[in-house]
Length: 186
Image 1 (cartoon, rainbow, N blue to C red):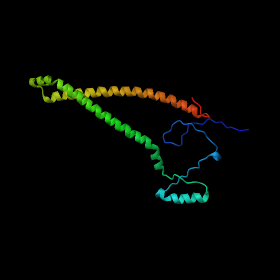
Image 2: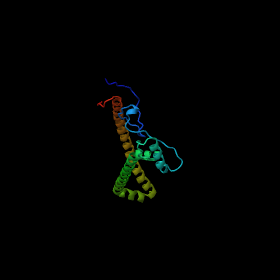
Image 3: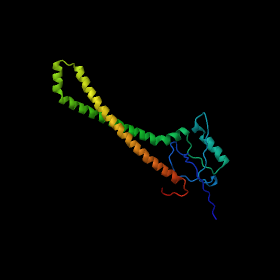
Image 4: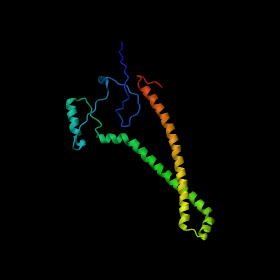
């Protein structure tokens, strides 16, 4: 006869800095396949202490392996590396998109100015200052840029709202799946 123990536990993710819903099975400590973790606080170079710590651990338990010695800064950097790469890539794409949009607005303004050369000539002949004409053209460009940016911001807000609603439903589903002993579909 096999005894089973069931429990409902809150969502806990002690493996990552950014918490995500994951399926977890808790096992008794005696059945744990992986060893524990040893943290050492030092004011000197931590990697210089690795041989000493390894020797001390081996004296205490000869069959206990010591592997992957790393500082918490190294672990944090490894965990955040994918997010940092994503930020750099998306930032690069955003810069390219910004450059394309600037070139597009400049092209539309150039086309508008080339079509209005007669109007500008007449306005100059009447006595209008070149500065006034230039200010009007620049104001037209800012109006086009502002209109475009505000419409893009509204569309992005709608997309973000729809995406977060779908993501929250998926997270709730994953959280329900996590409490089951055997993985099943939601």
